[in-house]
Length: 286
Image (cartoon, rainbow, N blue to C red; front, side):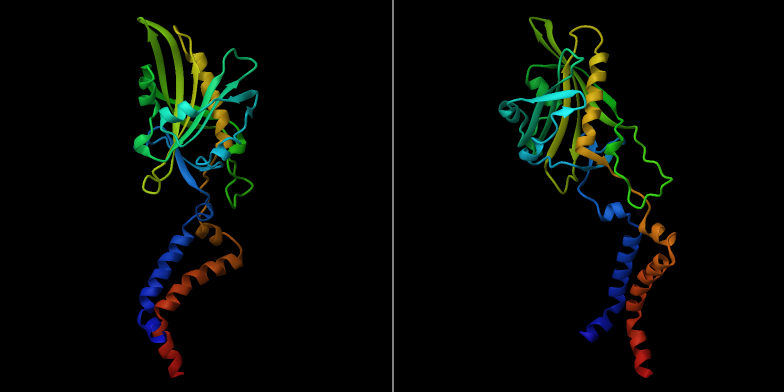
């Protein structure tokens, strides 16, 4: 064992040095991270407006999904029977609710759905036409999230740092209509985004959708603003934003004398291993 360590001390030392460098230039939030995912508007590829988040809830558990709050501010929710919806969406886990507000004459419809197979999942752009709707308009919207409680306090944050609370997320927008005998009988505003793990690590698809009925004719801006506001209100219950914070190297270098000694020892350890054979020869001669 002694000969083996002496023979390969340089290789072992270089590996340890690489580990130390990676460790020191990582952030505490990365090392201690919970499940890290992104939320974005496209399932097949990444976009510039995606946001890194940590999930607060288990989207793969029906039991956990049912604990999602039925009261969000002045909104009160009631559950829907999800059997048919689960079949049409190709869903394994689903939460479907109608949330009503005392100052509004109609509810908004909230859906969280997860499928364990990407190939069997039906995104809104496919699902609505299959249900007889025509996509009248497609685009993106910025959804404001103003509740500061959703922003996770970064580790080792100084008292002078402020956490930005007025954050926006991106959602895909669809305006869909249903017709009968050439006349529009229904119009909906639909907002949705995906909660994405690394595609190589998971084949699951998770989608969050908010929709509401819009006037058959004229502007839909009023309903769009309501759905955006409600979607923004739901975000803090599902996610916390991922704060990178300073690296461990920065923390130790700007810390106490003990912190600086610890950092120096971390750097010295791999070099002691690298030159272990030479050091052992010198010590034997003495």
